[in-house]
Length: 354
Image (cartoon, rainbow, N blue to C red; front, side, top):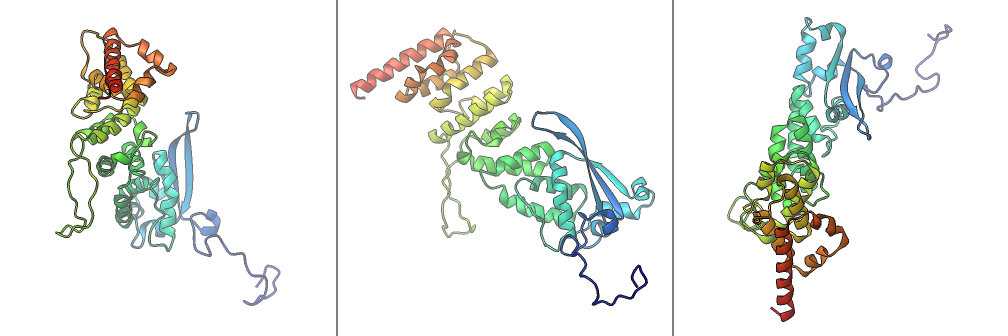
């Protein structure tokens, strides 16, 4: 019966508009349409591009059956819904404070709960946050799925930095340890533009570099005797490894405040026996700013940096460029005299043909 009293059969009238989600119930629907029976408020601090922090609140109108029912259920919400003594249960509302990284991933979690898809839409950018959510709300199936994803995805020079950055912010220790190991194994593929270089956590680089260059070894992928390819892992003390890492360390100590103790850990001769000439002057200046200038003798780092300069004609030429002058003027007489003497010695040998 229609509003005007007339009768309508199933075949009469226009086809009704298809609701969002292809007809499936969705948390994205208006609550009066979806008959939502629970509200979730996610509260977080948002930092804009200019660095201004403001408090934000995202509101989701959801359904208890999706949160606490079926194989994907949350034990957190299942317990909450059964416990009538909780104030949340009486108000039918949860208000939760989370980090902005996690707040941004919350819609992905809800899409997974409401979707027929077997897996959530996981990416490098949201995996750590979803790992946190799966633990916080005790989603056992989601926890297993997310962990399976990040354990594979993290083993990449392009992704391990993102995982470490996010795990450091969200205190995800298992991911932190895996990211350190991945960065250690793929460090030759990490360059100074990588976001991991600018993460303000000195302990990360200390952990990555504490054992020096990996020892060369054969790796059998099938775990048996059959040889199935060999990874190119550099020898202990390898010049190429050390010079590459010196560029990463220089980028880090120039971008992130480092104290004297940690600076020495990152630049000692056991970790960096060889310095790349392109960053030698930057490291000498970083050391001077931290420890001051003492011309009684050269430090170990000064020795290695000067050696890097004076073994390459191109680097000697770079010392004469205008951009190097301000830093050179800051150095003490011992450093400058050693640079001059060794540069002349190298140039003389080069012209004499040996």
